[in-house]
Image (cartoon, rainbow, N blue to C red; front, side, top):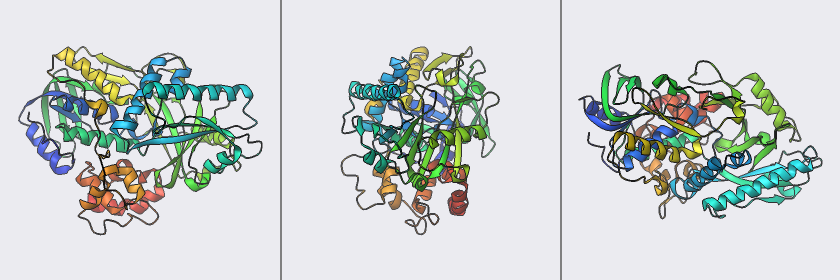
Length: 507
Protein backbone atom coordinates (compact mmCIF):
# COMPACT_ATOMS: atom_id res chain seq x y z
CA UNK A 1 0.00 0.00 0.00
CA UNK A 2 1.21 3.50 -0.80
CA UNK A 3 1.28 5.78 2.28
CA UNK A 4 -0.70 9.02 2.22
CA UNK A 5 1.11 12.10 0.98
CA UNK A 6 3.70 13.18 3.52
CA UNK A 7 2.91 16.59 4.98
CA UNK A 8 -0.88 16.19 4.95
CA UNK A 9 -2.04 15.99 8.57
CA UNK A 10 -5.71 16.84 7.96
CA UNK A 11 -8.16 14.15 9.03
CA UNK A 12 -11.70 14.46 7.67
CA UNK A 13 -14.58 12.52 6.16
CA UNK A 14 -13.27 12.78 2.59
CA UNK A 15 -9.83 11.44 3.48
CA UNK A 16 -11.38 8.61 5.48
CA UNK A 17 -13.59 7.57 2.54
CA UNK A 18 -10.67 7.67 0.08
CA UNK A 19 -8.42 5.60 2.33
CA UNK A 20 -11.11 3.02 3.02
CA UNK A 21 -11.68 2.72 -0.71
CA UNK A 22 -7.95 2.26 -1.33
CA UNK A 23 -7.82 -0.56 1.22
CA UNK A 24 -10.82 -2.41 -0.17
CA UNK A 25 -8.78 -3.93 -3.00
CA UNK A 26 -7.23 -6.49 -0.65
CA UNK A 27 -3.83 -4.84 -0.34
CA UNK A 28 -1.33 -5.78 2.36
CA UNK A 29 0.18 -3.40 4.90
CA UNK A 30 3.04 -3.79 7.33
CA UNK A 31 1.05 -3.07 10.47
CA UNK A 32 -2.53 -2.77 11.70
CA UNK A 33 -3.09 -1.06 15.05
CA UNK A 34 -6.39 -1.66 16.84
CA UNK A 35 -7.40 1.23 19.10
CA UNK A 36 -7.44 5.02 18.70
CA UNK A 37 -6.40 6.08 22.18
CA UNK A 38 -3.04 7.52 23.19
CA UNK A 39 -1.25 4.15 23.00
CA UNK A 40 -2.64 3.18 19.60
CA UNK A 41 -1.98 6.56 18.02
CA UNK A 42 1.50 6.56 19.53
CA UNK A 43 2.24 3.18 17.91
CA UNK A 44 0.92 4.40 14.56
CA UNK A 45 3.17 7.48 14.73
CA UNK A 46 6.24 5.43 15.67
CA UNK A 47 5.57 2.94 12.86
CA UNK A 48 4.94 5.57 10.19
CA UNK A 49 8.10 7.50 11.06
CA UNK A 50 10.11 4.27 10.80
CA UNK A 51 8.95 3.85 7.22
CA UNK A 52 6.29 1.19 7.77
CA UNK A 53 2.88 1.22 6.11
CA UNK A 54 0.40 1.36 8.99
CA UNK A 55 -3.37 1.45 9.36
CA UNK A 56 -4.98 2.39 12.67
CA UNK A 57 -8.60 1.34 13.17
CA UNK A 58 -10.90 2.59 15.94
CA UNK A 59 -14.50 1.50 16.47
CA UNK A 60 -15.59 4.89 17.82
CA UNK A 61 -13.64 8.16 17.75
CA UNK A 62 -10.11 9.18 18.64
CA UNK A 63 -9.68 9.31 22.45
CA UNK A 64 -13.10 7.72 22.93
CA UNK A 65 -12.01 5.63 25.94
CA UNK A 66 -9.69 6.12 28.89
CA UNK A 67 -7.49 8.60 27.04
CA UNK A 68 -10.05 11.39 27.48
CA UNK A 69 -10.88 10.65 31.12
CA UNK A 70 -7.49 11.29 32.77
CA UNK A 71 -6.48 14.01 35.23
CA UNK A 72 -4.76 15.82 32.32
CA UNK A 73 -1.47 15.36 34.18
CA UNK A 74 1.86 14.29 32.74
CA UNK A 75 3.23 12.77 35.93
CA UNK A 76 6.91 12.81 36.77
CA UNK A 77 6.64 9.46 38.55
CA UNK A 78 7.00 10.69 42.13
CA UNK A 79 4.31 8.37 43.46
CA UNK A 80 6.05 5.36 41.92
CA UNK A 81 9.38 6.36 43.41
CA UNK A 82 7.75 6.47 46.83
CA UNK A 83 6.41 2.93 46.33
CA UNK A 84 9.82 1.65 45.29
CA UNK A 85 9.14 1.34 41.55
CA UNK A 86 12.21 3.21 40.42
CA UNK A 87 11.93 2.08 36.81
CA UNK A 88 8.49 3.61 36.20
CA UNK A 89 9.46 6.74 38.16
CA UNK A 90 12.57 7.32 36.07
CA UNK A 91 10.82 6.59 32.76
CA UNK A 92 7.91 8.85 33.67
CA UNK A 93 10.25 11.74 34.45
CA UNK A 94 12.13 11.22 31.18
CA UNK A 95 8.95 11.00 29.10
CA UNK A 96 7.48 14.06 30.81
CA UNK A 97 10.61 16.00 29.88
CA UNK A 98 10.41 14.80 26.27
CA UNK A 99 6.80 15.98 25.99
CA UNK A 100 7.46 19.35 27.63
CA UNK A 101 10.70 20.11 25.79
CA UNK A 102 10.37 18.46 22.38
CA UNK A 103 7.15 16.68 21.38
CA UNK A 104 4.36 18.93 22.67
CA UNK A 105 5.52 22.02 24.59
CA UNK A 106 2.36 23.75 23.34
CA UNK A 107 0.10 21.15 25.02
CA UNK A 108 2.03 20.42 28.26
CA UNK A 109 2.90 23.16 30.72
CA UNK A 110 4.31 23.30 34.24
CA UNK A 111 1.50 23.12 36.80
CA UNK A 112 2.09 24.38 40.36
CA UNK A 113 0.93 21.91 43.02
CA UNK A 114 0.24 23.43 46.43
CA UNK A 115 0.12 21.31 49.59
CA UNK A 116 -1.23 23.56 52.40
CA UNK A 117 0.40 23.09 55.80
CA UNK A 118 -2.69 22.92 58.01
CA UNK A 119 -2.94 21.83 61.67
CA UNK A 120 -4.38 18.47 60.55
CA UNK A 121 -1.05 17.65 58.87
CA UNK A 122 1.46 16.49 61.47
CA UNK A 123 5.20 17.03 61.37
CA UNK A 124 5.95 13.55 60.05
CA UNK A 125 3.50 13.96 57.15
CA UNK A 126 4.98 17.35 56.29
CA UNK A 127 8.49 15.89 56.29
CA UNK A 128 7.34 13.02 54.08
CA UNK A 129 5.82 15.37 51.49
CA UNK A 130 8.86 17.65 51.54
CA UNK A 131 11.17 14.68 51.09
CA UNK A 132 9.01 13.48 48.22
CA UNK A 133 9.15 16.87 46.51
CA UNK A 134 12.94 16.94 46.86
CA UNK A 135 13.04 13.47 45.32
CA UNK A 136 10.89 14.84 42.51
CA UNK A 137 13.47 17.57 41.94
CA UNK A 138 16.08 14.83 41.70
CA UNK A 139 13.99 12.96 39.12
CA UNK A 140 13.66 16.13 37.07
CA UNK A 141 17.43 16.60 37.07
CA UNK A 142 18.00 12.93 36.27
CA UNK A 143 15.66 13.26 33.29
CA UNK A 144 17.54 16.33 32.06
CA UNK A 145 14.52 18.62 32.28
CA UNK A 146 15.71 22.18 32.96
CA UNK A 147 14.29 24.22 35.82
CA UNK A 148 13.18 26.80 33.25
CA UNK A 149 10.73 24.18 31.96
CA UNK A 150 9.80 22.66 35.34
CA UNK A 151 10.68 24.84 38.36
CA UNK A 152 12.16 23.50 41.60
CA UNK A 153 10.00 22.79 44.62
CA UNK A 154 10.03 25.13 47.60
CA UNK A 155 8.12 26.25 50.68
CA UNK A 156 5.96 29.38 50.49
CA UNK A 157 4.34 31.51 53.18
CA UNK A 158 0.63 31.68 53.95
CA UNK A 159 0.06 34.84 51.92
CA UNK A 160 1.56 33.27 48.82
CA UNK A 161 -0.44 30.08 49.38
CA UNK A 162 -3.69 32.07 49.53
CA UNK A 163 -2.79 33.98 46.37
CA UNK A 164 -2.33 30.68 44.50
CA UNK A 165 -5.38 28.92 45.98
CA UNK A 166 -7.71 31.62 47.34
CA UNK A 167 -10.26 29.34 49.04
CA UNK A 168 -7.68 27.38 51.07
CA UNK A 169 -8.46 27.21 54.80
CA UNK A 170 -6.69 30.08 56.53
CA UNK A 171 -7.13 29.13 60.19
CA UNK A 172 -3.80 27.72 61.31
CA UNK A 173 -2.32 27.85 57.78
CA UNK A 174 1.46 27.62 58.19
CA UNK A 175 2.36 28.28 54.58
CA UNK A 176 2.52 25.52 51.98
CA UNK A 177 4.81 23.25 50.03
CA UNK A 178 4.93 24.07 46.33
CA UNK A 179 6.10 21.71 43.61
CA UNK A 180 5.55 21.42 39.84
CA UNK A 181 4.41 18.70 37.47
CA UNK A 182 3.31 18.59 33.85
CA UNK A 183 -0.27 19.47 32.90
CA UNK A 184 -1.97 18.87 29.57
CA UNK A 185 -4.30 21.50 28.19
CA UNK A 186 -6.34 18.39 27.36
CA UNK A 187 -5.65 14.67 27.01
CA UNK A 188 -7.95 14.17 24.02
CA UNK A 189 -6.20 17.01 22.20
CA UNK A 190 -2.89 15.21 22.71
CA UNK A 191 -4.37 12.05 21.14
CA UNK A 192 -5.63 14.04 18.17
CA UNK A 193 -2.24 15.72 17.72
CA UNK A 194 -0.44 12.35 17.79
CA UNK A 195 -2.92 10.86 15.29
CA UNK A 196 -2.60 13.80 12.92
CA UNK A 197 1.20 13.70 13.12
CA UNK A 198 1.04 10.00 12.27
CA UNK A 199 -1.20 10.83 9.29
CA UNK A 200 1.27 13.52 8.22
CA UNK A 201 3.92 10.78 8.02
CA UNK A 202 1.71 8.44 5.97
CA UNK A 203 -0.36 6.51 8.53
CA UNK A 204 -3.98 5.72 7.67
CA UNK A 205 -6.26 6.71 10.57
CA UNK A 206 -9.75 5.18 10.37
CA UNK A 207 -12.33 5.97 13.03
CA UNK A 208 -15.82 4.42 13.09
CA UNK A 209 -14.18 1.22 11.81
CA UNK A 210 -14.82 -1.87 13.94
CA UNK A 211 -12.64 -4.98 14.17
CA UNK A 212 -14.93 -8.01 14.10
CA UNK A 213 -12.10 -10.57 14.11
CA UNK A 214 -8.32 -10.39 14.49
CA UNK A 215 -5.51 -12.80 13.64
CA UNK A 216 -1.78 -12.29 13.64
CA UNK A 217 -1.81 -11.52 9.91
CA UNK A 218 -5.23 -10.00 9.26
CA UNK A 219 -8.25 -8.18 10.67
CA UNK A 220 -11.88 -8.25 9.56
CA UNK A 221 -13.24 -4.70 9.47
CA UNK A 222 -16.71 -3.15 9.29
CA UNK A 223 -17.26 0.47 8.36
CA UNK A 224 -19.68 1.66 11.04
CA UNK A 225 -20.99 4.41 8.74
CA UNK A 226 -21.74 2.38 5.61
CA UNK A 227 -21.96 -1.15 7.01
CA UNK A 228 -19.48 -2.43 4.42
CA UNK A 229 -16.95 -5.08 5.49
CA UNK A 230 -13.48 -6.09 4.33
CA UNK A 231 -10.49 -8.17 5.36
CA UNK A 232 -7.22 -6.28 5.72
CA UNK A 233 -4.02 -8.33 5.64
CA UNK A 234 -0.90 -7.25 7.49
CA UNK A 235 2.49 -8.55 8.50
CA UNK A 236 1.73 -7.64 12.11
CA UNK A 237 -1.41 -6.82 14.11
CA UNK A 238 -1.11 -4.89 17.38
CA UNK A 239 -3.95 -4.73 19.88
CA UNK A 240 -3.93 -1.39 21.71
CA UNK A 241 -7.60 -1.33 22.65
CA UNK A 242 -7.06 -0.40 26.31
CA UNK A 243 -9.79 -1.64 28.64
CA UNK A 244 -11.37 -3.39 25.63
CA UNK A 245 -8.19 -5.35 24.81
CA UNK A 246 -9.86 -8.58 25.93
CA UNK A 247 -12.46 -8.22 23.17
CA UNK A 248 -9.66 -8.39 20.59
CA UNK A 249 -7.68 -11.10 22.41
CA UNK A 250 -9.84 -13.12 24.84
CA UNK A 251 -6.75 -14.50 26.58
CA UNK A 252 -6.02 -11.08 28.12
CA UNK A 253 -7.09 -10.59 31.73
CA UNK A 254 -7.40 -7.02 32.99
CA UNK A 255 -8.62 -5.62 36.29
CA UNK A 256 -9.98 -2.16 35.53
CA UNK A 257 -10.08 0.49 38.21
CA UNK A 258 -12.29 3.57 38.04
CA UNK A 259 -10.94 7.07 38.49
CA UNK A 260 -13.58 9.77 38.97
CA UNK A 261 -13.32 13.56 38.66
CA UNK A 262 -15.79 16.32 39.45
CA UNK A 263 -16.04 19.52 37.39
CA UNK A 264 -16.54 22.93 39.03
CA UNK A 265 -16.61 26.53 37.92
CA UNK A 266 -13.17 27.95 38.74
CA UNK A 267 -14.94 30.66 40.72
CA UNK A 268 -15.95 28.03 43.31
CA UNK A 269 -12.23 27.79 44.15
CA UNK A 270 -11.55 31.52 43.81
CA UNK A 271 -10.07 31.14 40.31
CA UNK A 272 -6.88 29.39 41.50
CA UNK A 273 -3.59 29.35 39.62
CA UNK A 274 -2.22 26.27 41.39
CA UNK A 275 -3.59 22.79 41.93
CA UNK A 276 -4.69 22.48 45.53
CA UNK A 277 -3.20 19.16 46.64
CA UNK A 278 -4.79 17.54 49.69
CA UNK A 279 -3.48 14.40 51.40
CA UNK A 280 -6.15 11.71 51.73
CA UNK A 281 -6.73 11.07 55.45
CA UNK A 282 -5.20 7.77 56.53
CA UNK A 283 -3.13 7.39 53.34
CA UNK A 284 0.63 7.94 53.13
CA UNK A 285 1.06 8.52 49.43
CA UNK A 286 -2.28 9.50 47.92
CA UNK A 287 -3.75 12.94 47.29
CA UNK A 288 -6.82 14.62 45.88
CA UNK A 289 -6.13 17.41 43.38
CA UNK A 290 -8.27 20.46 42.59
CA UNK A 291 -6.72 21.50 39.26
CA UNK A 292 -7.39 24.70 37.29
CA UNK A 293 -8.33 23.76 33.72
CA UNK A 294 -9.38 25.32 30.42
CA UNK A 295 -12.82 26.87 29.86
CA UNK A 296 -12.83 28.37 33.36
CA UNK A 297 -13.11 25.05 35.17
CA UNK A 298 -11.51 23.20 38.05
CA UNK A 299 -11.35 19.40 37.97
CA UNK A 300 -11.33 17.64 41.33
CA UNK A 301 -10.00 14.08 41.38
CA UNK A 302 -9.41 11.33 41.65
CA UNK A 303 -10.61 8.02 43.00
CA UNK A 304 -9.22 4.52 42.58
CA UNK A 305 -11.93 1.88 42.84
CA UNK A 306 -12.35 -1.64 41.51
CA UNK A 307 -14.62 -1.70 38.43
CA UNK A 308 -15.53 -5.33 37.74
CA UNK A 309 -18.01 -6.48 35.13
CA UNK A 310 -18.70 -5.49 31.52
CA UNK A 311 -16.79 -2.48 30.18
CA UNK A 312 -19.18 0.43 29.49
CA UNK A 313 -18.56 2.85 26.64
CA UNK A 314 -18.87 5.75 29.08
CA UNK A 315 -18.14 4.87 32.74
CA UNK A 316 -20.17 6.68 35.38
CA UNK A 317 -19.07 8.06 38.76
CA UNK A 318 -20.76 6.64 41.83
CA UNK A 319 -22.39 8.73 44.55
CA UNK A 320 -19.86 7.35 47.04
CA UNK A 321 -16.98 8.64 44.91
CA UNK A 322 -18.60 12.07 44.66
CA UNK A 323 -18.98 12.18 48.42
CA UNK A 324 -15.40 11.02 48.99
CA UNK A 325 -13.95 13.74 46.77
CA UNK A 326 -16.06 16.47 48.37
CA UNK A 327 -15.27 15.30 51.90
CA UNK A 328 -11.54 15.18 51.18
CA UNK A 329 -11.25 18.59 49.51
CA UNK A 330 -13.38 20.22 52.19
CA UNK A 331 -10.73 19.35 54.81
CA UNK A 332 -8.59 22.08 53.22
CA UNK A 333 -11.20 24.73 52.33
CA UNK A 334 -12.56 27.69 54.26
CA UNK A 335 -16.07 27.20 52.83
CA UNK A 336 -17.31 23.68 52.21
CA UNK A 337 -18.35 22.70 48.71
CA UNK A 338 -21.54 20.72 48.19
CA UNK A 339 -23.00 18.60 45.42
CA UNK A 340 -24.84 21.73 44.31
CA UNK A 341 -21.49 23.24 43.30
CA UNK A 342 -20.66 20.34 40.98
CA UNK A 343 -21.20 21.31 37.33
CA UNK A 344 -20.25 17.96 35.81
CA UNK A 345 -18.42 14.71 36.47
CA UNK A 346 -16.56 12.03 34.55
CA UNK A 347 -15.00 8.64 35.21
CA UNK A 348 -12.40 6.62 33.37
CA UNK A 349 -11.24 3.02 33.63
CA UNK A 350 -7.54 2.24 34.00
CA UNK A 351 -6.58 -0.92 32.09
CA UNK A 352 -4.58 -2.49 34.92
CA UNK A 353 -2.98 -5.91 34.53
CA UNK A 354 -4.83 -8.42 36.72
CA UNK A 355 -3.14 -9.03 40.07
CA UNK A 356 -3.89 -9.34 43.77
CA UNK A 357 -4.38 -6.40 46.12
CA UNK A 358 -6.15 -3.03 46.04
CA UNK A 359 -6.20 -1.37 42.62
CA UNK A 360 -4.42 1.68 44.06
CA UNK A 361 -1.43 -0.55 44.74
CA UNK A 362 -1.35 -2.39 41.39
CA UNK A 363 1.52 -1.73 39.01
CA UNK A 364 1.04 0.97 36.38
CA UNK A 365 3.65 -0.77 34.24
CA UNK A 366 2.70 -2.11 30.83
CA UNK A 367 3.09 -5.56 29.29
CA UNK A 368 3.50 -6.76 25.72
CA UNK A 369 2.04 -10.20 24.96
CA UNK A 370 1.47 -12.42 21.95
CA UNK A 371 -1.69 -14.52 21.61
CA UNK A 372 -1.84 -18.05 20.22
CA UNK A 373 -3.12 -16.67 16.90
CA UNK A 374 -0.29 -14.15 16.63
CA UNK A 375 -1.94 -10.90 17.73
CA UNK A 376 0.53 -8.73 19.66
CA UNK A 377 -1.09 -6.81 22.53
CA UNK A 378 0.06 -3.99 24.76
CA UNK A 379 -1.85 -3.58 28.03
CA UNK A 380 -1.51 -1.49 31.17
CA UNK A 381 0.75 1.54 31.33
CA UNK A 382 0.25 5.27 31.83
CA UNK A 383 -0.54 8.16 29.53
CA UNK A 384 2.78 9.82 30.38
CA UNK A 385 4.69 6.83 29.01
CA UNK A 386 2.71 6.41 25.78
CA UNK A 387 5.72 7.16 23.55
CA UNK A 388 7.97 4.69 25.39
CA UNK A 389 5.24 2.05 25.31
CA UNK A 390 4.79 2.53 21.56
CA UNK A 391 8.52 2.16 21.00
CA UNK A 392 8.61 -1.00 23.13
CA UNK A 393 5.73 -2.78 21.40
CA UNK A 394 6.90 -1.77 17.95
CA UNK A 395 10.45 -3.00 18.65
CA UNK A 396 8.87 -6.31 19.64
CA UNK A 397 6.71 -6.44 16.50
CA UNK A 398 9.69 -5.67 14.26
CA UNK A 399 11.66 -8.51 15.84
CA UNK A 400 8.83 -11.06 15.89
CA UNK A 401 7.66 -10.40 12.33
CA UNK A 402 10.94 -9.49 10.68
CA UNK A 403 9.71 -6.06 9.61
CA UNK A 404 12.12 -3.80 7.75
CA UNK A 405 12.00 -0.63 9.79
CA UNK A 406 14.28 2.25 10.66
CA UNK A 407 15.14 3.28 14.22
CA UNK A 408 12.61 4.99 16.50
CA UNK A 409 12.40 8.71 15.70
CA UNK A 410 9.73 9.91 18.14
CA UNK A 411 11.99 11.02 20.97
CA UNK A 412 12.64 14.41 19.35
CA UNK A 413 9.71 14.57 16.94
CA UNK A 414 7.45 17.65 17.33
CA UNK A 415 3.72 16.99 17.10
CA UNK A 416 1.49 19.16 14.93
CA UNK A 417 1.13 22.53 16.60
CA UNK A 418 4.52 22.45 18.33
CA UNK A 419 6.15 25.84 17.81
CA UNK A 420 9.04 26.15 15.36
CA UNK A 421 10.53 29.61 15.17
CA UNK A 422 7.96 32.41 15.28
CA UNK A 423 4.55 30.70 15.15
CA UNK A 424 2.76 33.96 14.38
CA UNK A 425 0.34 33.68 17.29
CA UNK A 426 0.77 37.22 18.62
CA UNK A 427 -2.56 38.96 19.02
CA UNK A 428 -4.62 35.76 18.92
CA UNK A 429 -6.87 34.75 21.83
CA UNK A 430 -4.67 33.07 24.50
CA UNK A 431 -7.17 30.22 24.89
CA UNK A 432 -6.94 29.46 21.16
CA UNK A 433 -3.14 29.38 21.29
CA UNK A 434 -3.22 27.17 24.40
CA UNK A 435 -5.27 24.56 22.54
CA UNK A 436 -3.62 24.72 19.10
CA UNK A 437 -0.14 26.12 19.61
CA UNK A 438 1.50 27.16 16.34
CA UNK A 439 -1.60 25.99 14.45
CA UNK A 440 -3.77 28.69 16.02
CA UNK A 441 -3.43 31.04 13.02
CA UNK A 442 -4.33 28.15 10.70
CA UNK A 443 -7.55 27.49 12.62
CA UNK A 444 -8.79 30.96 11.69
CA UNK A 445 -7.25 31.01 8.21
CA UNK A 446 -8.80 27.65 7.22
CA UNK A 447 -12.30 28.51 8.45
CA UNK A 448 -14.99 28.72 5.79
CA UNK A 449 -17.88 29.18 8.22
CA UNK A 450 -19.73 32.39 8.93
CA UNK A 451 -18.49 34.48 11.87
CA UNK A 452 -15.40 32.31 12.56
CA UNK A 453 -14.20 34.46 15.48
CA UNK A 454 -17.54 34.42 17.31
CA UNK A 455 -17.98 32.23 20.41
CA UNK A 456 -20.00 29.07 19.74
CA UNK A 457 -22.34 30.22 22.51
CA UNK A 458 -22.50 32.99 25.08
CA UNK A 459 -20.08 32.45 27.94
CA UNK A 460 -18.14 29.61 26.26
CA UNK A 461 -14.50 30.35 25.39
CA UNK A 462 -14.50 28.36 22.12
CA UNK A 463 -14.92 30.04 18.73
CA UNK A 464 -16.80 28.79 15.68
CA UNK A 465 -13.58 28.33 13.70
CA UNK A 466 -12.59 25.61 16.19
CA UNK A 467 -15.71 23.60 15.39
CA UNK A 468 -14.95 24.06 11.69
CA UNK A 469 -11.33 22.90 12.17
CA UNK A 470 -12.46 19.87 14.19
CA UNK A 471 -14.35 18.63 11.13
CA UNK A 472 -11.96 19.68 8.35
CA UNK A 473 -8.64 18.82 10.05
CA UNK A 474 -9.19 16.77 13.22
CA UNK A 475 -11.42 13.95 12.03
CA UNK A 476 -14.60 14.86 13.91
CA UNK A 477 -17.61 13.14 12.31
CA UNK A 478 -20.40 13.94 14.78
CA UNK A 479 -21.67 16.51 17.25
CA UNK A 480 -20.38 14.29 20.06
CA UNK A 481 -16.90 14.20 18.53
CA UNK A 482 -16.82 18.00 18.56
CA UNK A 483 -18.31 18.61 21.99
CA UNK A 484 -16.84 15.68 23.93
CA UNK A 485 -13.37 15.16 22.45
CA UNK A 486 -12.14 17.98 20.18
CA UNK A 487 -13.39 20.42 22.80
CA UNK A 488 -14.50 19.59 26.36
CA UNK A 489 -17.70 21.62 26.29
CA UNK A 490 -19.72 18.45 26.82
CA UNK A 491 -18.40 17.91 30.36
CA UNK A 492 -20.99 20.40 31.59
CA UNK A 493 -24.53 19.52 30.51
CA UNK A 494 -25.70 23.14 30.46
CA UNK A 495 -22.84 24.13 28.16
CA UNK A 496 -23.54 21.17 25.90
CA UNK A 497 -27.12 22.36 25.47
CA UNK A 498 -25.94 25.86 24.57
CA UNK A 499 -23.40 24.68 21.98
CA UNK A 500 -25.17 21.68 20.43
CA UNK A 501 -26.92 23.60 17.65
CA UNK A 502 -23.68 25.31 16.62
CA UNK A 503 -21.87 21.95 16.49
CA UNK A 504 -24.68 20.47 14.38
CA UNK A 505 -24.04 23.13 11.70
CA UNK A 506 -20.66 21.60 10.96
CA UNK A 507 -21.52 17.90 10.67
